[in-house]
Length: 101
Image 1: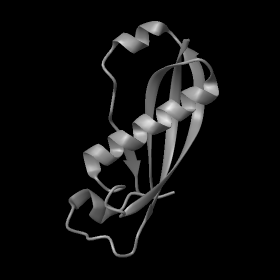
Image 2: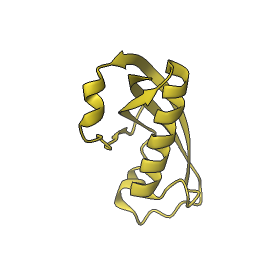
Image 3: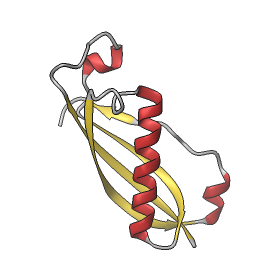
Image 4: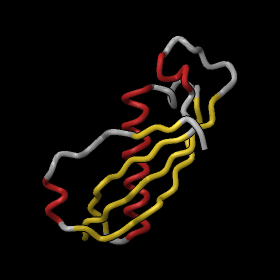
């Protein structure tokens, strides 16, 4: 097992019937970036683990996915092996949203 750094890019596609009461949802970001450090056997399984953690965290924080307001397409912009020391630090669960392509 090795530690991998995965830079994740997510594309958000909003549903037309989404309520606009939520202040962040009112801006309707079209995408986001974040990163995760994961323990995995190879780069492909590292991407899968990182995508699952990003999807779960985004839905836990925002609730957009489970409410059906948005669909999320994830891709890995970078997957590189990293130091195992990165795994002992607290996970950065933030997302950087952008509103225009």
